[in-house]
Image (cartoon, rainbow, N blue to C red; front, top):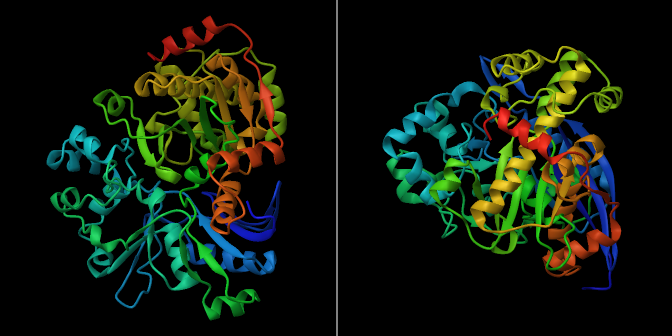
Length: 481
């Protein structure tokens, strides 16, 4: 590791907000501060839900100005969504939000041409109705797609606007369901069979590679002195979060990246593309250094966020009241697609309890407890299934991301899994972003060195399992899992 210290800017775009984090990195040091945070408000127009990417880009520019002089910039975001550009490089409308209903029923159409089991054998990707493949099939007859000359995933689009250089970063490309999980190249045969032009995507690039330098107009807008390189980080935010799991050398661990979604799984050296894995809805997504993120998507704290929004409530009192209620009175399947779309979340949760013959939670604390018990149960099931399907036992669970602040959820996860939980860091995606940039700058070495640096510098909390394991078994039985 180099003895010097440098400052990098980590742009971390989430589903509800974006932020630019400024981090000072060097020998034994990772010091990070939030330079700027900005809202990410989807916009519904003409019946379609869109991302306001121009507002996001302006937020990035404002954040870089607030960050001050930096030695590198990296961008991570959510997966699957993309922008279309015409022959002049102009954006053909705001990207469609993955929660838009346009992909309803599209997967079934795709499977008539390429059966689900064949699709999994090629891509290793779990079924999710909003995967990029299904979005592109849904858009096949649109004027925008007919006019498009390039398609860029969200962090690649932002990088293009900052540098003028087009590319497709690998970890995010692996979520499109257009990448061959074994070769890690585009599956051109699959795309051709489904009438998708995979050539719209710019060439693949690896995490840690240099995208280009900030354009003169960007330097002027931000007040930065050039050249300032933009580095391709693990641009899928979950991939960045997994970089920031502070596991010890040789530790057998599972991880849960918590936030709007819970992504629960293992870090493997090769994909697991068995039929049993497909039926269990496990995905094989690319990580850094040739690793595989073998995980299951769970609806996550989206369930609670939507309820809190509808109630207009404050979260801390809800969590305190929920902690006093009996455990496992009612549970729901937190991976059920019925909870994917926004609005009316409390009623949908109550209806799920009615349908399964369980007591119906009526008050906000009861619904909150139902959600947290259910998420812990979903975490348990995902980690148990991952160990079995990959033949990869674990001794500890690392929880990273915003959910580490939810101490009740962390304890319930330890109780449900029967394993110790190490919670932290909360800013995992941003820290993973920072560390890949730091490695590109020669400030840190391999993954083990990155993780040792985090274990030394970040605040972590350990939760030991408590309570009755049999109660969790019985609750799982109510959901047929």
